[in-house]
Image 1 (cartoon, rainbow, N blue to C red):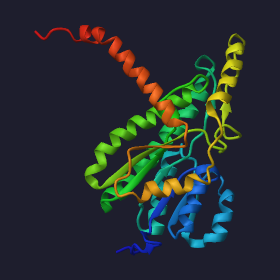
Image 2: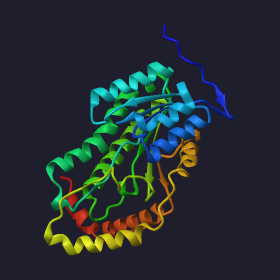
Image 3: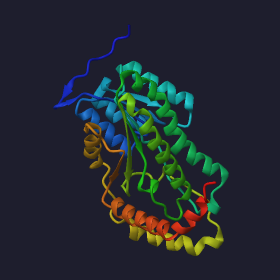
Image 4: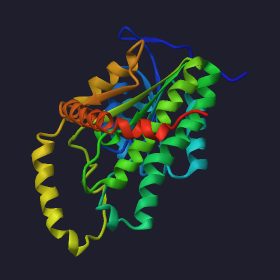
Length: 289
């Protein structure tokens, strides 16, 4: 029989084992460090694990660095199994790996669209599928999907990114209902703008079409006005700990001050439109024979 560590109590909370993708920087790195700092154990994945040297040097065997491209399904399953073998259980599984692609819908190439979905949707799906047998067996666990305000609302220039996050939202809401009976929780974290590398070197951009030049300028100005001051990724660490330690964690939670206002306006507009056109909805129903 394989040895499994007993759960210990750390600072009033039960010690947890985390599996986090995309830990080279930004949210993933901050959250991994926050978990380790309080005595939890973390399997941290990154394309290049050199970015995790600071955490390995500080926390030693409590961190398991794993080199992983989340688009590789077999590698994702192997990484999750390696983490479970190392620590004996999995309590928190965070699908954080992802990036933003910029381009109007007409400008996006097939390769760009497929690459965005491979990472942001399929990468999260593979890790989720890999973790579920372990979580079901232990009848506990918490899967956290890093979505975005862009997972429930949409703006110009990031259409394929929105598509990826809306897909993540959809399968995760279904998942939450499917696994509740096994004691597994699911949470969608929906950040607004933060000072991460999401729109920096990690992002990609389509070749612009000349006919959209004026609109590109307008959208660029609008983003400056709408986004406001970005959030601090380091501050988000305290927030993620609140979520993972909650007895009844939410299915969805915003990170940052901007998303709630955006969501309220968007959903109010949707309801107004649905109600305005409800006579057409009723017409489409037809009469039962």
